Image 1: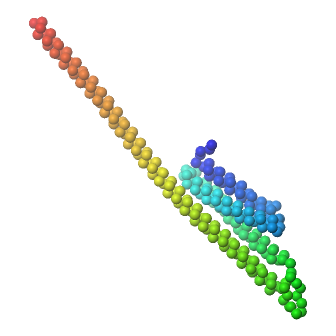
Image 2 (image 1 turned 90 degrees about the vertical axis):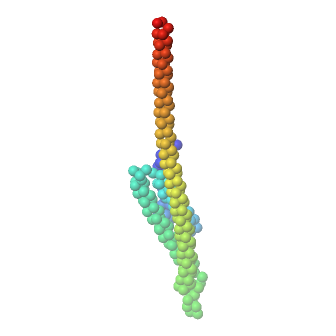
Length: 227
């Protein structure tokens, strides 16, 4: 298992690239030639994949906080490139949604042929215009709803990122406190070792003094007894 500080970032980036490739196939590859309900389903899938790609970018932004400063700028540039690519496909998706709506509007069959008594008729430009306006308003409403959801998701992601940053700072502070405690313990241990060593030295000196005194006493006694 890779435990390097960039392993999770690389994993999220790889997932992002796979999602973008799937989106590219639907918007620019063979998938763009689909028609009708198949095309609608493809565009709905693109919307979901864009949300997934957005989530991968958010995860990459979280993981970059744990990458060493010496190489962080390289990964920041990769995030910037990923964001630019994601925004391009979001714009392309909106354009193709609008194009599909226009195509559906223009392809609707007529409801009748105008007569001299009905100069506007059921298939008049007025009817088409009203229908087109209603369809475009519905599309705009959906896009605004999608933007609202995206903004809420972005705010939630920012809150999570701030929370994780705060937790990271707490962990860092706790680590610094432990390091200071370890340093204090090492100093105390060194002091105790010096005290123990001095105690042994004092015992040796005391024992030597006692031995010398005993020898002196014995010498004095011997000298008195043998005189």
